[in-house]
Length: 177
Image (tube, rainbow, N blue to C red; front, side, top):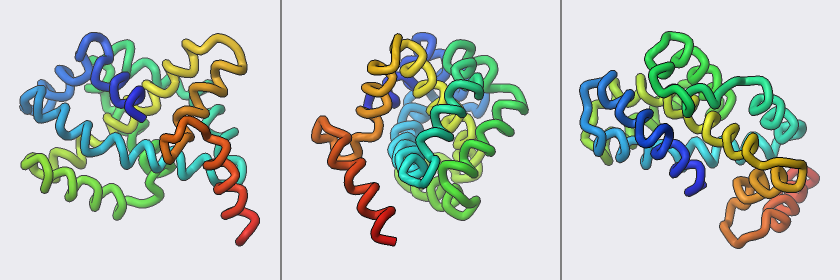
């Protein structure tokens, strides 16, 4: 997840952070704080989705077809209505409901001091950046084993360096239903 966060924050030498800051009249440090608050929950949401039947295939398909890397490569694209619509679609898939998004925005507002109405507008953009960062990481990995390594490190929920125990846990949960 830290690689994903670094990818978001470092996109185009911080251009994504600057774009969002300018778009919402915030300081870059405030945007970094907001991203720091939102990214872990988005990452867990993506991980949780991959645990559902067909979820990993759906993630790989979305990364291959979604063109989300445009948000990382061209931060100005975050200012378009399409970026918000795309981000809202991603959020619906990752978080499942608007209530979860509202709760996340409320928590981030409490921790950053930025009004939750602004964070609700930023949240879809961060979701698009998160998918863009993950897309870039998998695209840069040449070949199946490296893509597996990237997704494997992302799916390593407990951070022990192995996704195997996490995948076994996922299978156990699925079979135990």
